[in-house]
Length: 305
Image (tube, rainbow, N blue to C red; front, side, top):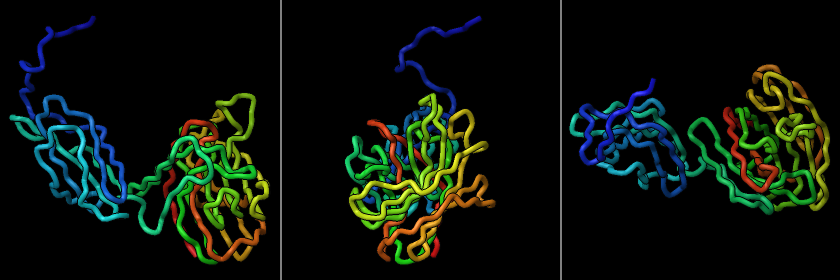
């Protein structure tokens, strides 16, 4: 049995209690501003935006009497991480605070981002204090010319980068991982560890693998050094339904790749020798493998020397 109420115009209908907390708070950060959007609370007349430098507060009010469901915070420092929440109000009172969210005002220094090579859709890279949200298009890095979104920081000499891929990428054709390369040229020398959708009989259920790739000379085709098949719990029925840890290490001209299902027990995937310069770009490549973009999440990103 279904029930309904008589139709009424919005001008005559009023909520007789304080509104519920707003939902769906989303933050997008640039080095010049942070934009917040959220879902309207039924019966709300205005919103109060609150900000903190810590994930659990305390929060300070930065804007009151906001009549729309978006707000731009321009009083920020480039690269700093901020945490936001908000409440809704009407004549009957104020709601509790919304579920908070964090975002960096652009990437924290010294991280940088750029599309490498020819891509169909410009990429974006965001950091919320614990996770990287990376969106990119491009066909990949397994040919003569690379095409992907790159988020990196400088490395001088030996070093290691580690990260955990979170399920699921936005496309079953996505490739993502860790990379050390000499420059942002699309044919630069590099070594990379990728989580890669290997071919199978079903395009939506690829045979997911880890691949160690390298280009030993500028302008040459990428070479495949080693491949390992991903299994449960990272992969079920051809989909990346679980997290997976990856690590890429440089010692001199030797680049070593490792993988782990829990971040504790590591397995060697392979190693290769590439004569890269001492000063490198070390970071996270993401490509969609198609004309549309993909969205990929990494956390526990760490670098060491």
